[in-house]
Image (tube, rainbow, N blue to C red; front, top):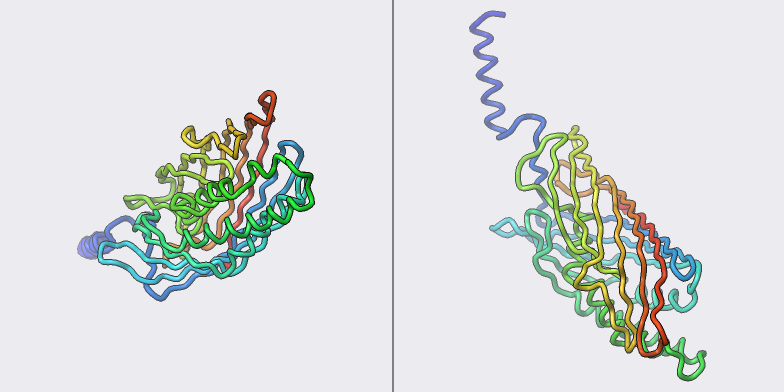
Amino acid sequence: MNTKNFSILTIALVAAFALCGCGPTENKLALKIEAGDQYKLNFVTIADVDSMGSKSIEQDIDFLVDVVSKEENGDFSLKLTYDYVKTSMEGGGAGPETDLLRAQASVLKGKIVTLKLSPSGRVQDLDGHLEIQDAIVDAQSEAMKEMMKGMPAGNPMAGFLGEGFFREQASREYGLEAYDYLMSQIVMPRPTEPMKAGGSWQCKMATPGAIPCISDTTYTIKSLEGDKAVIEVASTISVDPQKSEMDMGGMKMKYDISGTSKGTITLDNASGFVTSASFQATLTGEMTISGAMMPQSMTMPMNVQVTTTVSPA
């Protein structure tokens, strides 16, 4: 090759790399969404629980995600709408628990939460969640009253499955930490530096729900090809020591449970938005029930398998 031509080619390549700010195999995985953008995603979660009998709970939700604005500091304002909600349950205890789950699902459809999201994909603030909590508590309290009509007087269920219990559950499952965890599956926590295939970063967050846990997650870039990025996800999960015990009207439930989760996330490189994902979690441990209504505490093993899939709706 002519030396002059080689020099020109070298200068051109260096200039190209300088313009893009990083090598061709690197990607900052930044969120590049804009005001007016809308995304619709379907979430299907199936939880198989083995404790005091086996049961399987399935939740099917379509979310509409509207980008309202992008602030000067890089924060985003998002509107999250529950566009479709269906919940079903099979197995032990399916009667009363199904009624409570259906009561919850019945008030979610059409509800809207507005979120303030940082450039790193974490929820900083939210609004509309308190209205959801109030609606769920009212619906489940009414469902519980109807169930109690067919039960003998003095049934202990009335003591611990009351408004106080429903309020605690709703505040945990529809609070800031819960939506931060939900958005981790919609927009994914972002790295602070450009990454290339094989690069990884970590994120620790609460995973609120019936069993409050903390997940420590490692995200690893499996591939950066064309218009998409594929991310492998691996988590260790342990019960939150500050929230492992629940007081339910004179009865206490304490959880000692841990496990792991793995999954894959696919991002659209143009927007940085999640287009599909799948996660599988396995938790094992035990639950101890005690209180004034029980002569002695009772400990039961727990095994939980949870599968979540995210896809375009």
